[in-house]
Image (cartoon, rainbow, N blue to C red; front, side, top):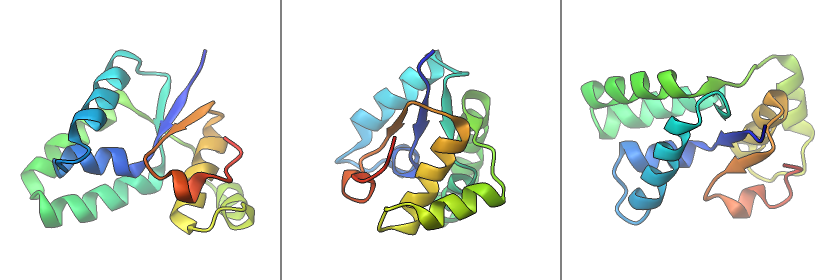
Length: 124
């Protein structure tokens, strides 16, 4: 079974209704809803979503979206190995490296992202 990790930027596009990316990111989210069990997200994405979401979309909207996310996505296991892996990866941006490490820990096949620049050297 092919599995995927969805990068934080896709979730933020939907939550913040970023006009330039909303249609594609909503399609990804809808697809993920039909393929639960195959889709993952990084543990640290929750913190970013909470911080940015409550600041720009409000507590109520962010809380509702969190509920929807947690019904659909598996959370990648995180431990010292994932942190050490993120530090060793040839990925310039550390948050990007954390996404790749989370994908590696979840043993996914692909990362769904718009951040091609920072993840170009990723092994997934």
